[in-house]
Length: 351
Image 1 (cartoon, one colour):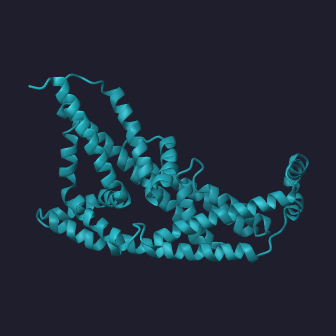
Image 2: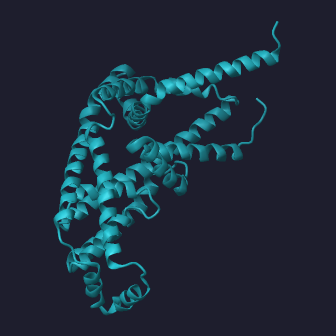
Image 3: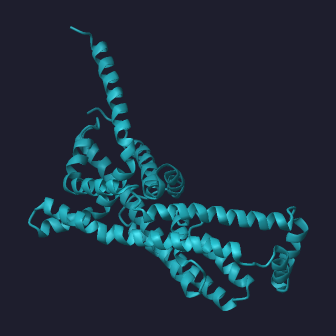
């Protein structure tokens, strides 16, 4: 008979090899699996209601929702991606061909206002960079940002999933995630080496964190992006779809979507469109009030999620997973924070 030490070493080695093989197997499909999981999580409440309406026919419900997903979710997303990429291209051409006031002319224009004259004088006296350096930096930064945005928008237009095969694989996985998702989660949770009561608490805790991130942060960001796009369209600023999408991304930052609206207000002031500037400033204030009302409502009865976790998770998630990382990044990082808090609040006990 082999010793207990030998058997444990053998099991650890086999587990490590199989885990590595599984990682290599699934890593090419991470985007497909990720989108299927996110859509399944969002659609699951509707799936549960539809299953009850169909008298417990879960497969029928999953099939109906899977067939409707390309038209209800992915169709509008693709249309948005096409519009976004087109407006980015037009905006880049506009920046290349348009003549803007120079840095000096802008300072001279702002110096005419008594309330800003002291600030303008301080900028002139203490700014070490030259006018040409500022103009070159602004132009290069804007074009780099827009080119990156154009690549992202093109990726959305292509379906986010990379290929047509990936798209249908995502739908295939979505069906089974909807139909068998609870059983998959229950089977995975049973592997956690703690007593059943604590496993149930942990599952509830992680579910609350996921809902808080998806509905409290992601949905709020989508609403803010829509508001920014409408605001740009109302004051006749170019490419409202582009800046609406940028606002969605900026909503995950600590400053929020205001980093898109505030420069627009300053630009309108600089070109003398005071009425539009005042309207957009009020629009920004209204968006901020709506955000502070909407976010608590969407996260009601859910776990509190760290703003730092959402910020770092969104930035790192986009770098690792692309657009999908805006959702997956904050969820994964919030999971880690939630697990640490759960361990602190529920010290381990003997099973």
